[in-house]
Length: 138
Image (cartoon, rainbow, N blue to C red):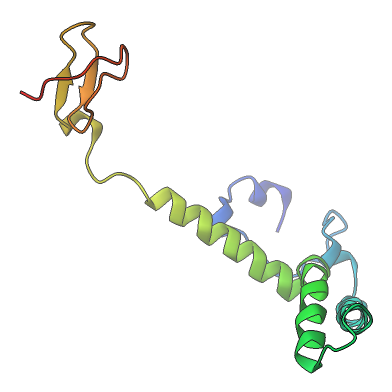
């Protein structure tokens, strides 16, 4: 992908495959696979050991839980698969938020005009948005 190609892409079109360009500044692209997973596994083990030290009566489940808790940020930062998953999740949540629009256009909503100040309020309002006086439902 060239620089001119990246200008034409929207976030939904991003290609998350590993690029060997020197311009790529993400941590997952600048570390090799073995080093990335080594960091994640080390963080997992350290998290598990810390849980065993802090909670002496802990069991294997707490070792796994705290290991995953400590290792998950490293997974998203250092591994390519974690970065892909996280970015796809972000793009999906952004597109979902864009789709959450009100189905009724603003122009088609019925308005109640305040008799005191003339403010046009939506029909759901009991009080004027501008002056605070009670609206009479006509």
